[in-house]
Length: 267
View: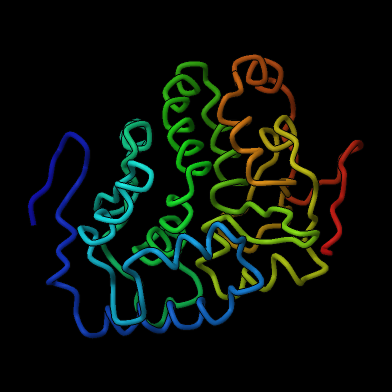
């Protein structure tokens, strides 16, 4: 397996996946594709339809890129796991989505703290087929180094978390999933839309920047876009003034209720 010390990329090593690896993918893929119709947004469903991704086994990134690159200019590159922030931002700014090349074990089907190939490919790549999400994630990468230089990286990370990873969107009056962290999780795909426990509130950028999140449990708050096209405006927003306004202000707990919050009904 070859690697680059500059950008942390490695060969996917597709031929080295075991029968168990492909079986885990199949189990995860089959249960998510059975669950997500009527839960995932139209853009996710459409992206999935056009990608060489099915229950037969872990996709070959080369085959994915043959479809993805002509559509939105993105490609999937393999990395051994989480990469440094600067490397991550550089990849996104150049329309390269870094994906872990490993897959969870059978005993980790429902929870894995470090994102694996199922989360990264099944959860993220269908949305990268959509031009709006494709442009937004590139803009996030471009803005990452600026945020770091301003000491505002935590603020920007919360925007990514509550959109790309755990975002909900209105579609024909109902809530739908577009965030990869939900779409790749069987239990959170149900919880995010059906449970009465979490808060669901209208997306507000300043509020999002100040809201902490959970990495070890279901989210306690989800922010809802009225339309996915709102990401276009978000991607073109100068975050600098918001960083200055938010950076020294208190953060909100993941389940905090704040005056001015606009709660969104499930349907």
